[in-house]
Length: 211
Image 1 (cartoon, helix red, strand yellow):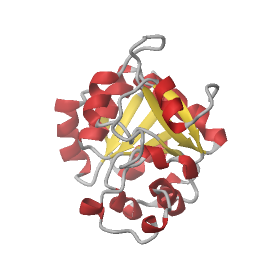
Image 2 (image 1 turned 45 degrees about the vertical axis):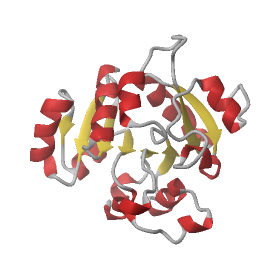
Image 3 (image 1 turned 30 degrees about the vertical axis):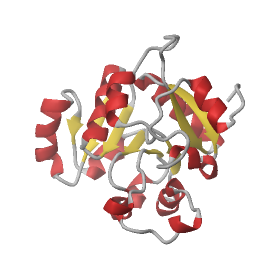
Image 4 (image 1 turned 120 degrees about the vertical axis):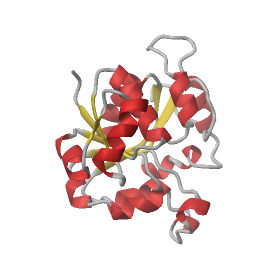
């Protein structure tokens, strides 16, 4: 069995990522505001094999935590429980859902906002620029000519581990750089919603081929 991954959020994105990582052999824990009982029922139907847990239990044992909930809910998380964890931020800022964030209106990347809230964590942007349906149907093994690329952005020391998770989920990781370089991944950006090869992502985001 692979290492433990906790997913915060049991909606369409969270359960899709859960299925992908379960198939790759990870021990997947899922936590949501609905509580373990309601979440467990959802998982039994949509992502059998994933374990529903309370937030503290799920993230406490996890090596990697994936945020798959509305951006506006991040501030409600207990940041102390995420301290020292590798956190993959799959959120996006949708003003109709989250409201207007003044900082984001001044060119602060949404994942920088998350990193500031979770200042004790190692935050990497990942899993956010493809829709859950593209994730569900697009996973391919390494070497498959139809394999889809997935951009990731964050600290250099954490991108290798984040890339392993993306690769295990069935996508080719492409390092864009730091969180400050993640604009193409956000809504309205060049990569958002685009199902493309790793080479196409590199070309569109002007990333060197060796990234």
